[in-house]
Amino acid sequence: MKKKILAGALALTLGASMTFSSGGSVNAENSQAKKYIVIFKDQVKLPSGFGSAISNAGGQIESRLDKLGAVEVVSSNPNFLSEIKKSSSVLDAGVQNIVQPETAAIEEVALVSSYGADADIYNSLQWDIKQVTQDGESWTLPGGTGKSVDGKDIVVGVIDTGIDYNHPDLKDNYAYGKSFVPGYPDAMDQNSHGTHVAGSIAAKGRTMGVGPDLKVAAYRVFGPTGGAETSHIAEALMTAADDNVDVVNMSLGGYDWFQNPDYATKDTVADVRLFNRAIQYAIQKGVTVVGSAGNNAVDISSPGKLSGDDNGATHRSPSSQSMIRVSAGGALKNLAFYSNYGVGKIDVLAPGGDLGPNYNPATGAGRDNSYLCLATIPGGGYGYKGGTSMAAPKTAALAGVIIAQHGKDKLNPAQVKSIIQSSSEDVFKSGYDGESGFGLINAVDALN
Image (tube, rainbow, N blue to C red; front, side, top):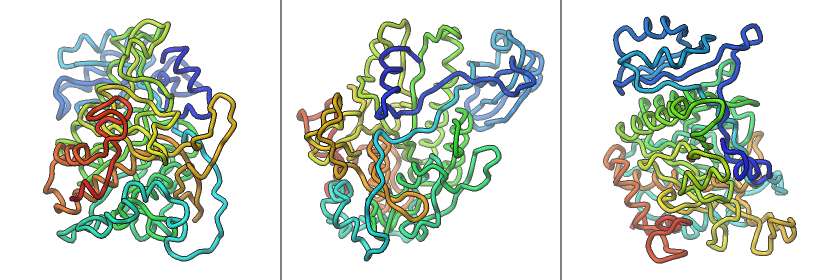
């Protein structure tokens, strides 16, 4: 990843988009062994003889992504990449990246009473959910709560840190959980990020989500500490698609720098290809995929400019044109101070929270935490967070209620995306702009 603009932004507490780093050593005994992704030309299956090709290049298969035509490989051969690329069946191969766990741009403990009536916190503090639902008006429309017109559950898969499935506001809407974290078979959230995301989607208790009758499924890719390999995230997305979820929320991402001095540019492209294949696989199976734009307050439209003084191109990833990419807004329908933006890179704006109109990011003065987004956190509690991570799940929930209005498997992802875009409210320039995309999401207009 380029050194100055992004490294500086990531050093700030608000700079919380996940970062990519090179796949490191596998174990202490063999510090030269590295993990690689090998992508074959066939996108839907592994070619015959692929195992021999890997072995002959000095690699050992760690895991297979058969339906994506890719494998995860470990090798101590310093020439592994050049040798495997000689195979006529190989499209790309590269060092596997590690995605570090995302934190919100801003986090605060919510000072709320331990006891309260249903929806009391929603009524007093959840301005963001009210903004999307127009003070709950969308819940009065067919499908508006996420209860499908055909009676089938509409499921939003949350690829994240897991979900606290015992939380009183979430347990009734928790569908199931799967973990892709080695050594952690349970999908229980040990971080808080995934539980907060899930609450924004489908909480129904003291807090409310945009779709309080939607179901959420946890696809846990992050443990309590450390990062996740790209292949594990791709596997989670592929599995969610095979499970016939309706929407996937990926409040995650980072940056791929295509001029990393440690590797040739051609050796860093495999990671991007794998993400794109996994996203396309999900979309082709009818899944609407939603992702966050990132929290570095930078224009991500120009890969060259994003690299600053460094050579090469820096890309926000995953960032497929087929997914719905979301920037973050505030209670005053402004672009949040930390949100990434960029023409051609943002589809819609959704409330992600900030620190109020008097906040000065340079000095920290004028902070008002009530402008952050409040939702569920593990242990039955509630917390404030701000970030594009908080904006994306509201858009994912909106996708869910749109599907609920029409019935499961009736709309394809392109139709869902079109409805979300065409019903969004112009808040900046008329029509499309790089800060809000097609505008601020609006559940009432989308359902009407």
